[in-house]
Image (cartoon, rainbow, N blue to C red):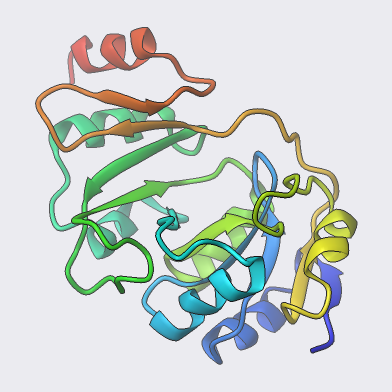
Amino acid sequence: MKTEILPADEIKSALKILQNGGLVAFPTDTVYGVGALAFDHTAIESIYTAKQRPIEKAIPILIGDLKDLNQIAASVPLMALKLAGRFWPGALTCVLPKKETLPNAVSATQTVAVRIPNHPAALNLLRATGPMAVTSANLSGQSSPTTAQEAFAQLNGRIPLILDGGETPGGIPSTLVDCTGQEPVILREGPIHLAELLACLKAPV
């Protein structure tokens, strides 16, 4: 397989590949991610193959708009809506009850992790494609790429397209918070701290 690097505004090329079951890497507000359309089971399975990723590791969903949340989540608790309204787009990933129509390749559990990334190239792509299953564009266990060239060095010959949006900020992954209970539970520490989440939830609507 030949891997092309194209400018990040080549949305039509990316869309064509994704709609035909292919994978595309692109910049986010942390690192470069590689993804497939969220409801394409076979394409999502190929992410595991391309990355040599253990099959038991769930893949987060990225969306470009809050309205897309209902395609992914079986229900959206008020807690999640308040947090999303405050911190999206941004470094907060919410764990929600998974819609049954989502492939098991995304998550073998009853929940799914969802985020809106704060990066113009990612948002442009996601608003064109709809929800995507996305994980870092690296070989499993290797460093996460912050440039298209670093993604190419690891995934050359494994995916058809990398969208080049320049260097990404890198840094720590998003805060991962479970929104399925009565109170938010942080599953992975990140840029947004528990005190900020609780302050948001206590604020008047």
